[in-house]
Amino acid sequence: MTAPAVSVVVVSRARPRELRLCLSALARLKYPAYEVIVVADRAGLDAVQCLPFAGEIVQRRCDVANIGATRNIGIAAAAGDVVAFIDDDAVAEPKWLHHLAAPFADPGVAATGGFVRGRNGITFQAEARVIDCGGWSRDVALQGPTPATPTTGAGEVPRTEGTNMAVRRAVLAGLGGFDPAYRFYHDETDLNLRLAQAGYRTVIVPLAQVHHAAAPSARRGTGRRLYGLHDVGASTAVFLRRHCPDEDHARHLDRLRDEQRRRVLARMVMGAVEPRDVAPLLRGLEDGIADGLARDLPGSLPPLRDEAGAFTPFPSLATGEDAFLGGRIWDAARLRRRAAGLAQQGVTVSLLLVTHTSLYHRVRFREAGYWEQTGGLFGKSDRRDPPLRLWTLSKRREREAQRVFDLR
Image (cartoon, rainbow, N blue to C red; front, side, top):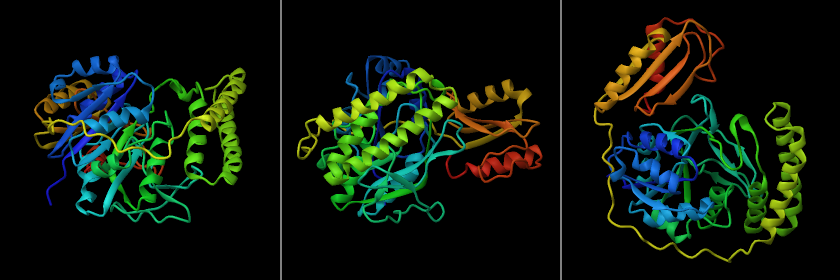
């Protein structure tokens, strides 16, 4: 079956540097038919103009701090059969869309979601999860890398991550897209429940992977610093009103208060929150709950209008073969020049730089167009690895090339 045309939607606000890196990775996807749509504030659209492929990107302006409304602008502009979503502070592995879109060959599949790696590029922020009507998630196990619908308990549905998910455009538009009542938080999980309630099937795809940096925003700073919990409280209250029996609201809100209090205190212990900020943060949570309980919620969302023009296929820069380079950290300058040069020629490049230590590994995408992995020759690059394992450089390079083979 022919791969479906996919519209990749990126929404961005006050993160021009992160957006530029996200788009640099999207420009190197190994997928035959995709378009890239950016919905951003002025700073974001100015950042897009700095990229050599700016003319190939569909662009829309939005200055409203509402992720649901902003994503809906992207959906309306999408001309693909499937709409995929990634956050502006995330980067996609080259075969991301190849894996994420494959289950749509089954007409019974309406949505897919992938795995999300954290800021070190190795460990996972999110794998397979399910969520219930109270807004509580739990991890579930899948059997290997094969796409599957997770087994759910009573009242649970498969959960996808907003930074790594895709939905058939006709289904998404028919459901009204994302609910703008969620300005931030629970916007995608609300959609998960609405998809399930309408009888649609969601598949989780382990090999569809993105790396999420969790960049600073109006709600969080560097070093896991918290700035506010208002939107967490507001969106949770909205979610409960949408999906949970009234008699259970108080129980779930108390659980939220306890969870967020422990979260704030844990951040205080690690130095990311000042003691004087604990009470204001928890007051912000209460203000948000009150806000969410008072918001006007329409009974149903109207279908989204189709404002798309012709499909705008993005000419991927990944036009060559694959290359996996490896060497010692003291040779980094030469190897990085070589990696950047190969990337300019359309090669999908992975670069391994090691020290003679057992340091854990990190992976990041460089704006020059290649993937760079650093760490100790004997260190962990998989959380299942032992703390130390003896390797030669050639064997380590062979192992890491095999580890990322299905992703790149």
